[in-house]
Amino acid sequence: MSSAENAFFQGLSRLVEPKRNGHYPGWLKELRRSAFEWVAERGFPTPKDDAWKYTRLGPILEVPFEPAKPATSHRLSATGIEQLAGDLGGARLVVLNGYFAPELSSLERLPAGVMVTSMAAALANDEELLAPVLSRPFREQPHAFTALSAALAEDGALVRIPANTTIEEPIHIVMVSDTGALPLVSHPRCLVLAGPQSRATIVESYVGILGDVYLTNAVTDIVLEEGAVIEHYKLQNENQTAFHISLLDVRQGRGSRFSSHSLALGASTARHEVRVRLEAEGAEVTLNGLYMPNNEQHLDHPTTIEHAAPHCTSRELYKGIINGHGRGSFDGRIIVRPGAFKTDASQTNKNLLLSESAQVDTRPRLEIFADDVKCTHGAAVGQLDEDAVFYLRSRGVPHGAARDLLTYAFASEMLGLLRLETLRSRVERMVACRLGGLEVAA
Image (cartoon, rainbow, N blue to C red; front, side, top):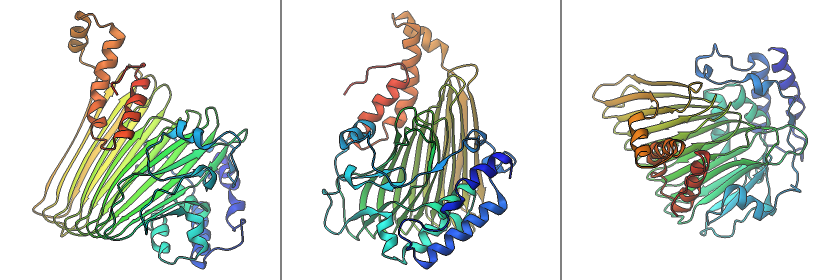
């Protein structure tokens, strides 16, 4: 390790052994030790690691982060949470600096049998069924940050939906950071278990107090059993003095349907990795994403969709709008395993550069090891159409407003895919604000 990596690593080492109540299941104690040893031996990714070639880790490793601890926020109330993350209706579970915050949560509006609780409570009950799911991101495709999550994560959110249950209102999981004067690192875990033929909408919001310096290292696991339908939204709106590293790991059973909508606006440096494995026939996945780096922001989006069974379908569309000295990246892989015949997969990445110093990296990829499949991919990078800008100016629209309107039109395709109306209205206002305060019809 470099000196910066070693300092970052050693600052967290004292948390390997449990400190809160001294109780962890045996499998979790072993996982924590082996994961931490993995990081100690192999260190952190570098630009020479192909999967991390677009992610800028230097600014993160140079910060002397302290590990977050359970605490009550003196700056946040339930009203403050709504201002930061919105009121979407339905249940809301708040995780503060990586730990469940019951005083900020509202979990009353849930159908019978649905469990929405803290991860720590589930672990304290020694639920063995959690072991294979919580250990999978580290065991199967490890890197330093999934290993640190496996070693240090103590709390987060657990959602369990019984078979044949439909949840009409969204379940909102708010990951909020309120660090005060110290730069803190937190490792929130989120696990969603969707039983056969169940339906739900899950929203994850990542927010923080303006000016705080912190790192969120988040891992979310979603498991869909046969026929389950999950619509998942992630809003990454950390403040721009913060850092964000996350993984969404999804496993799908027969005939299940999963859709993901990712919006990345915040953080100085952020990486949101998505891995989806279609494990049984007839599974369908849709991945949509919009990233909008500005100023000096660096926002990365590596995705992997693995077709491991026949007759599965995947659709992927990511768009980037890059301004100032911002840098965005999309690194998408679609893997078709042997025997996954009748796969139907498409992947598209489109990027709009708004300044001469804006940068984007795009790498769509297909890896096909089966016959009788239909797979397409493509990428595009461009600038605003100056003829369209001139047309609007000829109709009396100022130059800046014309550019903002055309940019919003580019983003509107992604906004129109957000089916949750309360969330879509909020996101439309956020995007319009980023583009110079455009007015959006309610």
